[in-house]
Length: 463
Image 1: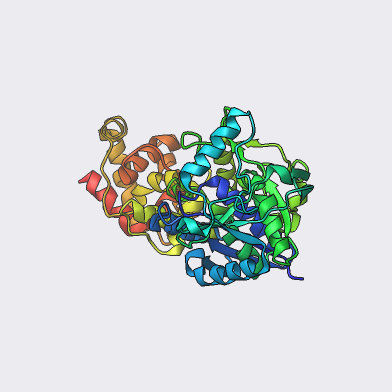
Image 2: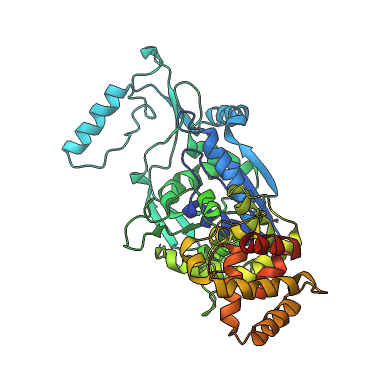
């Protein structure tokens, strides 16, 4: 049997890191076992589902590189299938019509609460004690959950979780207007799509016994369930926007690499010895859902930032080029060719923790001129340093080979001839060509800028 997992977000809110971790675990498990990963958009909540949330899901998954093998399936496009299964269940007697009004249900729950009982539907229509079709109301459809015994969810993360069937009321699976409900759609989808492993947040654990019983009523073998713990904020409270529960695309905007974010998320509740940094291939090879801890994990933004820099320093520069180009475009900078961007990445990656920071720090590499920082110019572009720069400029213009090594040799030679320390020449040169006092080593900086841009900027300063 092919291992089949699915990621099934509801587009009623933007995809954030909790959902991304669930998607990652499902994707890794399918990849490790040579299986199939399905993307399904559970959009049956027509009032709350939004096109913007769907866009963030699709763009976020693409940015993360969590490619699906099948889908995206949209539940709203499968209403015909749900209606078909519902008719089969009505014919089989595993579901029934309920004609109870809202007022009747409210009164029932009120009476239960007065007796300090758990509010739940008491099965009156199931047992012929309800208002019936003569009420003239459009009925809902409820599932006949077993009334006795227990339902055991054999969960890979939490172990066996026992639910007493007496505590599980008969769930509504179709509303009075005929539209199916979330739990019913999930069951039909998982059965139709051959899902073998359901990996999702443990906030869904209480839904599982009803879904399991519906699958059994339909004659399907239930999947393996694995409910992963939630992610908490650094203060131990539920993760919120102030902690980092933002749209996944905001991490792209802030300059994080997808592999760094995935590396961070895989370590929330899972480990492999003391290893902290994982490539994507290593995650696929080593991850197993059975090794996930059932305790909640805390989100640590500083750790994520550290991991991002580690991935920036370790990755092949060519793989970072598209991400840096994206950042530059969003700064209004027309990015150079791949070779130039690779050189910038090599020069800047130990000086920045995010690609956004790298892009901001690299503005001076683009455009013909620069705006001089007044304090830097006053301090370093003195009459004496301008004379030294004049001599250096004439020599740079004639430099046979424009490489970092040859530039370094020449700057050293001119400084020695003028009996200046290297810094007394390199820093005025840096201010002249970058506009400020901070850049990669001056030889690397000039090599990336190129001869023409370097000379134009020098001449603009020297007049």
